[in-house]
Length: 236
Image (tube, rainbow, N blue to C red):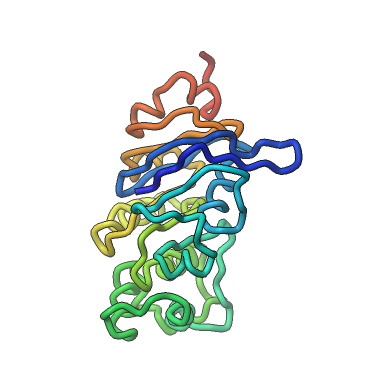
């Protein structure tokens, strides 16, 4: 569970996050909003790249802001970026294995953990393929696979659905919905693909100008006239 209380982030005179309070408790939650709404800033606060001016953030009751970025990783926070961080001259297996040097090992042997994660994301059959030979979807799967290693608690996934085909998007939806059952982690999904958000997230937070515009069951949020006006381009 993510609990945000009166969070504020300011860059000069710009209030990127303005007194945000929200509780995200669904297994897969969505984070949406127009460009400049504060989504990336919020994710950067959660990941430790940005220090807020004020407020509090708890994940499963733990004060997240008191932890360094490395401590957050060891606590179980994982993040993907819009640009995939795949090492081109390493195999899929070795791209994932490198992550094990920085996360809690858990009770499972490294080989078994890697094999289990690769099978879950559908890349076990191409485990020896170099990063430079992967297509866009496979690179996105590598990013998700890295996030699933080492006892994850919270996954922050930044636009994993961008640029995918319809078939790939369907596979991604199935994978995202299965993450909580696979490893027990909560997922916070940031994406402009409303269909992906609707298909995977049972709860969604909408930001606009750094403030909370809406929060609730995803279907209801997407039908909110204020959300449609601000984000989906509808007129009120």
